Image (cartoon, rainbow over all chains, first blue to last red; front, side, top):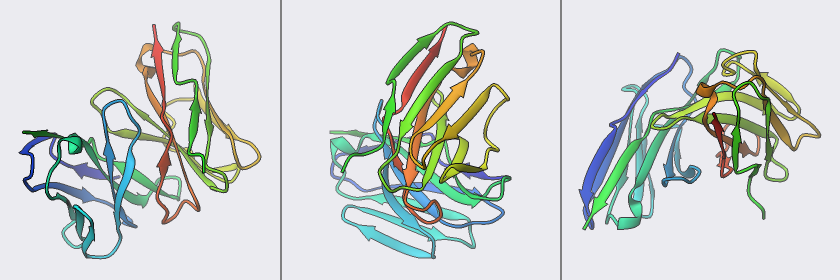
Length: 113
Length: 114
């Protein structure tokens, strides 16, 4: 089965940089996603990594190391609206034989002035 | 175009009653997923559809839960004889093919079992 770990909560200051880590154990890795979820809303896609390295998209970047079972989401120039839960999801071979995304519990990021 | 829609947005029911939750995916998306999210918990995978077939039902928590998809489009998640522990937000997501594509989530149905 899968085991996905990420910190429960982080706080940061507006304008700063924050790194949210995610570690995982899988049997058949096939990609890692990061989603953002504001309170009371559905998750929205941020990034997808399937190869090692850094993917940059505006203020957000995501890094993957498959050999270490490790990813991070880097948020630059933090804004108050970035306060949300950030979900790490790993696509792994499920018991039913399909590649299914399994989600971590999410990291609640609080950005303060 | 329109996103994933779900209905109802909120459902309050009494223990022991059956409920049906509906998901209307993005047009043309062949893959459809059901998840549930309890307070303070991560998303729990329930079932995955590719077209009308469900290659992976491994997440369904009990035989009280079932789902179907017709016409490769709308899906219904049915919970029979609801229990208080079924209370959660039920999220539906769709993607183009289901293998490497991004999932787009609906707004969810908040189910409360009294």
